[in-house]
Length: 258
Image (cartoon, rainbow, N blue to C red; front, side, top):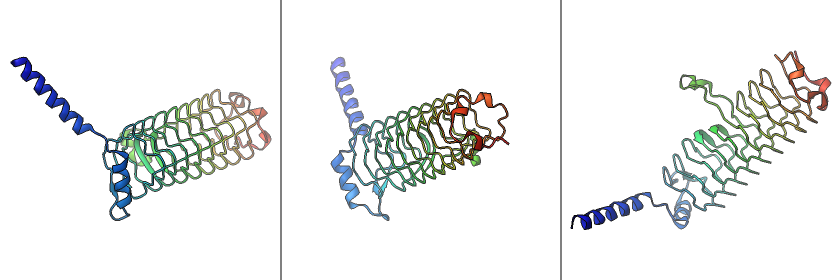
């Protein structure tokens, strides 16, 4: 009798847990989005949306703050202008999505797929280690260190081991970002702010660094083969021998070392 009571109690508990953790169906998400507008956004705040297929949807009138989007598929979706602070997005698929002007603060996005995504004008303080941002648009992004929260430790974007090959980073602010072993081959970095960035082991082969600021940047084993260095500022770097293959870069004589 006691054993039977235990089994019934356990079944009730498991049922309760299942109901509590159940995800919304895609159809329900679509219904909420269809009814939403700017003054009455779709309530997806803190919702468990893990592993859901939400591709191709327009979330511009949605509240996704603090939601769980781990391993979810939001490829080719529109999230432009949203506040995604504290949203969980590890292993998320955002390939080809519009994330222009979004805010992403205090978020783990490790191993995310952001290839071909539009991130122009966005503000990121997040961990994107090992993510794919190949051919993404990061023009004029503000991903620099957050100097207002130094009491919490240095709040910065982490891009270690990311794929940024062919990405557009024109005018991007990556002040003090972590880009160790990053693939930046063929990236467009014209006039980018790379002050104090850790680029150790990164590959900048054939990248366009014209006018970029690499003052106080860590460049141990960084590759510059074929990179355009016209007007690139390497201020505070006195030992050019630390710059691997820099002499093979284009317009090396026009780089600034003062």
